[in-house]
Image (cartoon, rainbow, N blue to C red; front, side):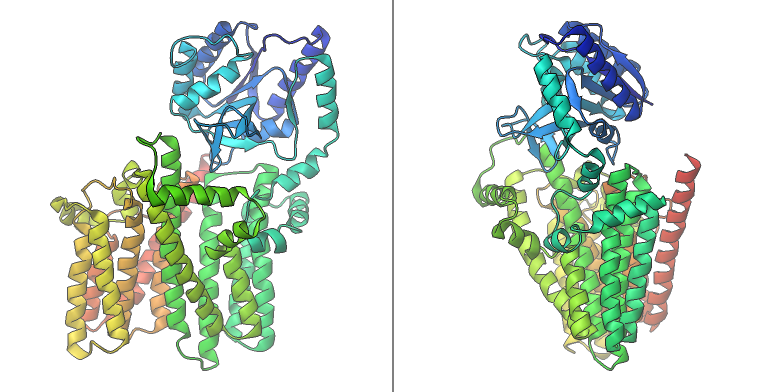
Length: 635
């Protein structure tokens, strides 16, 4: 249940009838935004308003929406506040280089102003104790400022100083104006009336900053599809399911490998990507969000892309082109490891924004951060688009696969994905590592480290007891050994019985990455640990496949299942979904390595890889279905 409080502003010169009408309009808008109860503060006295807010925060059993009573705004803006996708605290802001607060990666943090607070603040239930504490003391210093017109204006900077990191909800195409006189009220109402609210909301459903291909080849017309889907009553998850069907159809067309089929597959892949954008736009347009809906969208994206890899490889093999499956295997390993770094680097940035730096950042990393921020601020410039393209985002990956598949063949398309992916991985890893060193903030230790490492019983009960320090260095060394083994097997440096013995040695070295499991993961580069562990396991799978002559399609199948499991872990963290019942410490990365090593040594590599793929995929599906039922039953 959402409670709303209209806070009276001091010093207004509005006529009583205008003031009453304005507050009535705001109360109606707050109810339309989902507020079940709308209260009004006891008066213009700031101390009394703060008492009202402290009482409301202490008594509320759900989120609280605070709104200044001098705000003239489109009702959709209050609706957007109250329906923030992840249920986090959020504030309505307007871009202003002289504003009183700063926006960093979509979050509000203390510092030099880049945005101006527009007078509406949504406080999530988890942040209500902090709101009650800050409101009870007026400010963190204990006094009530005399130059502030409204208690909400007083609270936001105080909450930021107290550690709150709310989401920034930008006004963008809509209007939000604070008024103090009758003339300002008339002008503000005219400005609001001049905007087609529904059309603006539809356009706002498109991401403000997206990739180059998505911006110019999809978002220019996808809002029309979004509106059509809304009128048909389709849900975002329903559109996600349609996009999966298009991607699967594209993979099947690529498998056929004839020129008409390849062209048809390219078209289907493009349309599937359009629908992949539409599901998010539809969710933002209709404000129909859910943790499991966001999780499903993320999982579907990865599954679709990897299904297309398989289709391209199978099609190339069908027409007699060698090395297509090895390219597909390389692509899925590379892309999954890259996605793990993307997730944890984003978490690192959020953590850095949530806590002030102990000392001023300096060095190469700080200069790179400053340069990156300048480029990002120069929206639409050549440098801006080059920076977004070089990291090889999903739009560019799908566009590259579609174009090359239509014009050439699956092997060429996969080779291009691998080549560009390696370049992007080198670029992002180097720059992010330097920037992380300048931040000097740990992030992996702020969560359940063992869960996100995907440690199994062997590591949790035995190996982790060693508490070896430097988890990143130990993991990186093991990953290098696994990579060297794969290179050696590919170049026939290892052969016959020696290959199996070498595989056992590699397994033992890989398991050494479990010895730092209980050691602190607070280093500035320890956000790389999950990606390193994924690389160790996936490379070992490839080594087992090479040693045991496992069909490449079976190797890919296991890697696909493992990728879904690991994306499940990160997607639940990002989308705020609960932990899955299909995960657990019994069979982590360490246990799977042991099972694969035993299968390879006993000449049962193909059976071992196939069975393990079925077990991993089965546990993932059982957990996902169970969580869906739980989520539906809770409604």
